[in-house]
Image (cartoon, rainbow over all chains, first blue to last red; front, side):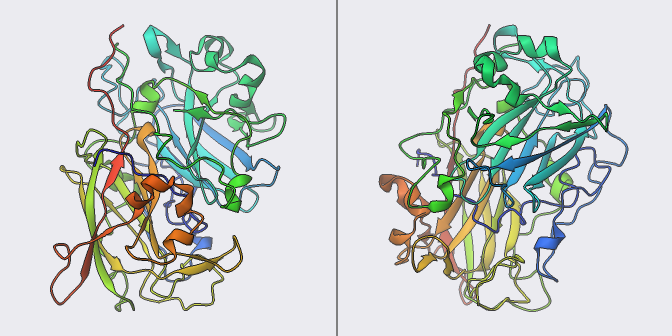
Length: 216
Length: 236
C-alpha cells in the first residue's frame, strides 16, 4: 500500500447512478436533480426526498444554471456536476471549520449533484454562500466549488463559481488573484436579466472563453 | 485561523492524463489550456462529514445488490470487500462509496444502453455503503460481464465495477474502476490503459478465499488509496 489508486472514467452510464431525488436542490425544498427518465422501469433506487427539512435552510435562495461544452463546442449530455459550498454565514459544515462564532445551519450540508440534461444543461437550487477564510489571513469571496466527471473524463475537472455583485471581494480573492486577468471572467456567473435570483454559469473546455480549471 | 494542512497532489506518475489518444472520448473532453494550480483552502479540505450525513443526503446503505428485487439475479454471486486508506496508510472512515455495474450479461439498466444482451429484472447494479471506522467496506453483488463499446474496432470492455468515493474533503475525491484478475480484455482496454503501465495493476482486485463464503459466494479484495495529507497545519 501507499500509492494512490489511479482514476478511471465514469463510463457512459454512471451519471444516472449517482444522482438522487433532490440532489440538485441544496435547500431540500424540491426534488430537482433526479433523472428517473434514464433508468429502466422497475430499477429506480435511492429516492430520498426532503433530507434536511423543507423551507428550513437559512439564506438567500439562488439558482445556478448553465451548460457544459466540450473542447469542440459540443454539449456534454452525460456528465455529472458536484458542488460544495459554505452556508449563508460563510461556514462549512465540517470539523476543520472550527469558527464557532459563526453559526452552523443544522439544515444545510452544502453538497449537491446534478446530472447534465439532453442539452448539456444543469440547474441547481441553493443559498448564496458567505465569504470564507483564505490562505494567510486573507478572505475568499463567496464561491462554490464545482467538480465535473463523466464518460471521457479520465479525471475530475475542478473549477469555482463566483458572484458578479461581489466586485470588491472578488478583486481581493486570493484564488482569483492567481488566475490571469483575461481569464477571470470565466469564473464569475452572470445574473439572468429576467429572473433576479438566477445566475448563469457556462463551462467550456475550449474556445476563446475556455473556463479556468484548477489543479487542486 | 491557521491554514489547513494541504492534501498531497495527484501523483502524475500514477494518474492518467486528462487526454489519452487511444481512448477517443477523452480527447474532446480535456481542457485545451493547462490547469492552474491553487493552494488548498478551507474549501478544498472540507466536504460532507459527520454522523449520518450520507444517509441524510442519499438514504440508507444498499450493500446487497442481489436482494433489491423479489427474485435472485442471474450470475455468479460475489463478495467484494476492502479498505479505504490514505497514502500514509491511515484508514479513511466515513467515505461514501458508490458502485455501479452491468449485469451478468453485460447490460446496464440505463435507458440508452443498446447492447443486445438481456436486462435482468432482479438486478439493478447500483449500490452504496459508507466506510466504517477502520475504512472497511463490503458489498455483495454478481460478477458483471464484458460488453462492447464504441472506441477502436471490435472494442469490448473487460468486466469491471465502477466505484465512486466521496469523502469529507473536496480534494480527495476518487472515481475509478475495479477489474478482475486474469481478464484477457484488461490489457486491450483503452480506459484501463490510460493509467500508466507501472500502476495499472492497482485497478485489479485480488481473488480471495478468505472473503469467499462457503456454499454461497466467491470473494474479491479491492483496496483504495486516497490522497493523504500532512499532519501539521501551517500557522500564520
